[in-house]
Image (cartoon, protein in one colour):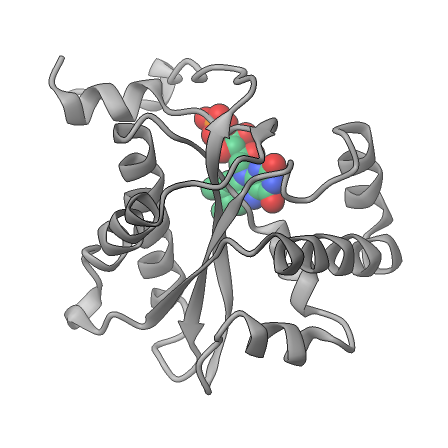
Length: 185
Ligand SMILES: Cc1cc2nc3c(=O)[nH]c(=O)nc-3n(C[C@H](O)[C@H](O)[C@H](O)COP(=O)(O)O)c2cc1C
């Protein structure tokens, strides 16, 4: 199996990170892999911001959990049962801010491809990742605008999705692809 296929088939979501900071070069190449993603008419309707500052990460995690407890108690209960953190102690998060003015619908597809490029880049570097849509809650409350500014959300952009990055303490392992969802004619 070649390296690309190996990265695809061995990747899995990490929910138990070693909080040790990652080298800046690794974070930079992962973000560049995200920005290399294809997009409709090459619009690149995103801005990728990598946050690796421990205080900012802790503030986002706490704010997200607080907002989630009020707005979505069922998600909050699930997170509590998984250890009570949104970010699982990851030392970095890559946030994909998505451009508001882009064609509704298409921008989220483009964001998703950015995300997949980043998780596969992380995998190829021997790092773990977890796509984190729930980070959205960090920007959903009264402090959301200030926190988005702290995470360098450009004007006219909103939270799209994010990727947690770090070394794994433990990993559940890759899920088995469902062959029943494939038809080869
Ligand atoms: C758009 C999207 C959002 C996700 N958000 C979260 C999240 O907020 N927290 C989390 O722990 N996992 C999140 N995940 C990870 C999924 O739960 C995970 O990909 C799925 O269970 C399959 O497991 P695998 O990634 O190990 O193959 C998200 C995945 C996607 C694609």
